[in-house]
Image (cartoon, rainbow, N blue to C red; front, top):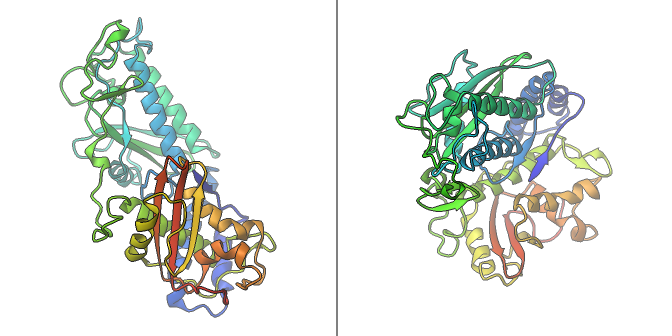
Length: 423
């Protein structure tokens, strides 16, 4: 996973300096970058006042709210499934004894649509649990100190919710007014999402939304196997994974709409991968345009004079790339365009790490005069392809090759000169 923590002396001051010292920037070329920088700066300053971590993270969750990191999502998801797994295994301490083994408790998946629903309510800073459709809700306004760490605060709250709720249970039967535990433990929920929003320096709105309403639905929290460990997963319709029924919810399988005329790549690539590639390229271009990009020689690279966003993903380039790399030859496709290629040695390595590696020459070697010449082509080409002001579109391909033990990643760029020229 790739974490990019952008911290300097004052985010708002820096954004103002970028706007002031942007030379002869054309408004139409930089408008969106400046606004994005200022918007981020305002949020960062608010988060910094609480000393809460503010990270940009790109990874496989694919959710749209970049103000919450995937590390935070992963922490919340892992805790929930750990709680449910221990409950299924019969190791959770109840009111007087351990709660019975669970025969049908499902593994939870993260649902970005539910996160969006949760975020829309959390930003309102409600004083009581909101209603979100027919979903299950767990909510609390958490008191925070002037300095807080959102991951620690939420982790502690989830553990408290679970431990205190379990103490009210004698078995799998629902207990009145033990609503949050009922939502966290309910066997039929297969997806959920949580979010948080700082309402002030002293309180945080924390909300989780579950695919099924464990409080409102009739019946027990789960099917009991008593104290018989052999009953673990006995009622699972599909696979059992470490004590939980593993049934991937349909909501996590979105219908792709991009590049559907591509015969070789439409089933091998997803819209999440396409949008991730486009967004990550624009992220690095935005960082460079606004003067935040680290440069080994200058500390921070000079702000760009003209850095338009990549507004379109190139399906034709994707098709050319995937037609070749899908067969795992281990070599790049011939695109006749400026391109980056990497065969990652660990075929399970996060794909987003690749773009970070392509960008790294600026941070490790530097480019003091923003040049692109024969002299630095070999060492700087990968970052320059991402950063070049003439780039208009990007198309990528990703192929996992277990037999090679590699993941092949290639991106090609429309508009970037094939030979070195001015950056």
